[in-house]
Image 1 (cartoon, helix red, strand yellow):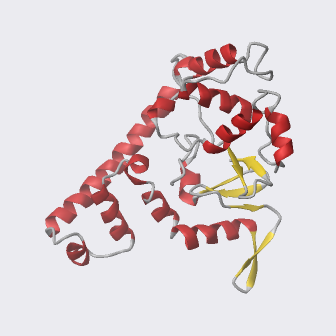
Image 2 (cartoon, one colour):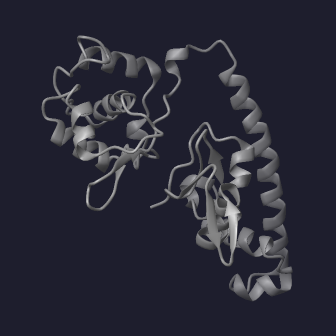
Length: 250
């Protein structure tokens, strides 16, 4: 399953294919990461963490370009044909070599695709400018969507939660305050997600936890911490090893 590129990702991060935290470099396309200050074996050489992460992207995802293409139509906004042709263009194939690979379409069709893709690039720049201006406008802050970290179903519009909705759900579910216990675990999917986003704040994203430590933290939110833990893992907020010995924030 493809990772969802976070809304906060910058163009520079998309170019690189990874993000940098205070302690690690993290792949944008899978759970791989390297710890800053550590050295890694790369063939016969020892390399720094950032180089090791770049090598991972090349070895596992082909390249940042191919990893971005693999996000599919939902992630790129491009059709299957456009993504396929972009791959050929990236590989430097001339139109005559692309022609049989593309099912024997005419050279003019391939040239037209090149033109359309350049137009989409121009339009994308305009769209980015429009959205940046919108974000800086005087729109109601409560109408903006919250970012949902680690959620496997984050591309599902059913889980689009505005800030106003989020505040209301948290107030209703945590009557004693957001750091207290839930009155009950919500039934609606959107409400479940909002509650887990709030509970995730009780974890340190830089730390690895034992099962016991996770239970202790979740017990501050619900007596049924076992069920809550299962949801946190199933929805991709918490990762864990196969044996359940270690947990971490996704």
